[in-house]
Image (cartoon, rainbow, N blue to C red; front, side):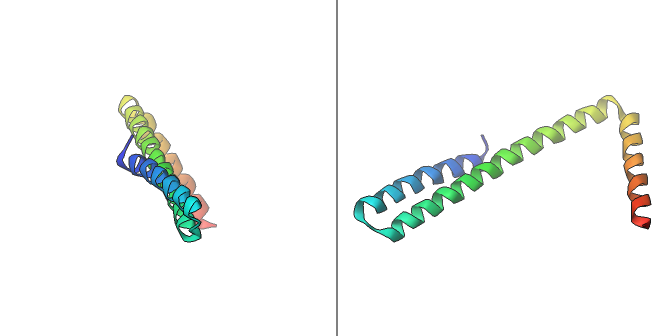
Length: 89
């Protein structure tokens, strides 16, 4: 769990408490702020999860390149060639 995930989960908990306090006191503004904080926390948590997944993918790609550097060069050259052909159109 990275810091974005931790902060996102914390914001969701605080948002739930804030929304519940708004319901109990009849304060619609506090309720709305709590709901918004929950949404913000959920978005930050998802961002943290995406960052973790991208780090894993980057590590896997680096490992494959180390194991087969010639194949990686050929793949990169092919992608460059295809992009060059497509950009001429």
